[in-house]
Image (cartoon, rainbow, N blue to C red):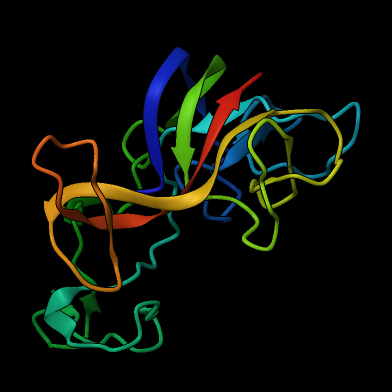
Length: 204
């Protein structure tokens, strides 16, 4: 999960550039190419702005990790390792990773050729941001050419930071180094986190 929608205004369905093989993770900032197709920002300037946040993931076929593989590398790449991959060929030499959406190999735009783009404002948590930036609350944020949020003055203002990157609770009780406080529950306790997310208010 790369995007948590707290509140959105407009969710448009826009065509992707089928000739561009670059992955677009959900939660990234995106723009349009000359053919009005969704791509990552080709450049960042005062006259070239992102149009919104990607609500779907576009994947070229790699994935992160499958529990069945037993791999210690949580960023294992199937084309090179195929650790724990599923054999799909009768001759035993055609394999691919399994994942939550086996039918489309985690490419959520494969069937329609379109991507959900949130724009017109809204409130979101995303894990697509520059991890070396500070993101002090109320500081304006921008995009870079990777579609990541950043707090450096690059081009057009995209939004405002509501909270610095922090662990987002999944609601699943747990303790340990990956558990974050879940004090909002009356019973208190801890919750295993989904990951570290940036809380932003969208201005585009």
